[in-house]
Length: 289
Image 1: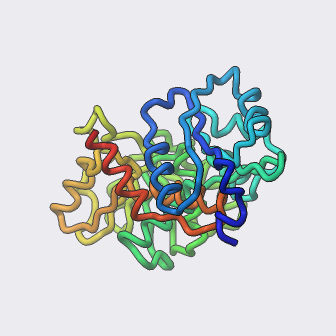
Image 2: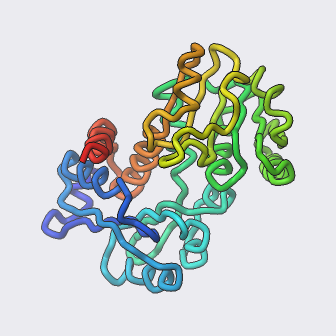
């Protein structure tokens, strides 16, 4: 069913993103361009919601007739208690970043991990099955990414984190859900793990603007020819990616994850394919303004 048929064209489709802060978000530029490209009469707005107003804001989605919203920091975990239904993957990940309003019934999804994997496969590594993957970091972003990666049946996923206990806890929890060979390690094991990894993924904030000279690990530890991916998209190429590229690695930046998580959310809301190329151009253009 086309979006034009599903949604009354005389009434705009209302979408938005809730966060605190929210003025920096590139999501409005990306989704408004997507709505226009798809021929959907609607608007996507930044919604500044402080933590003590989150419950009221979620009720407001229904009262104001929003079709859905994205949810970003710091609300991804707390918002779950105010929803009617939580998708199985979002429940396992422990965070929601997309809400769909179906006649007052609110369903929460997590599109971060699936968006990341779609981006990685489209842009850098088409086949993940049988690969040895090293994930740097053991926070919420890592959890969603590892869950989605595990569904692709890699040979092994090794989590590397400054606090080894956190990596071990995350690995143990994910293994308990039958997600395959996942190990947790401290950074003292990083050089050995990276020497055999086919894919290295940074989920930490190391290298994010303004700390652009930071790296999560020594790029020299990454074997030549590996694929190196960074969830950071500001800057578009981190120091980790730049130095890995110079070593002959395939590199993959975080812009794709941001675009594809938005694309999956768009498809949840409207039931039509997202105009991914338009969304990517809109984000890139927003960096230049």
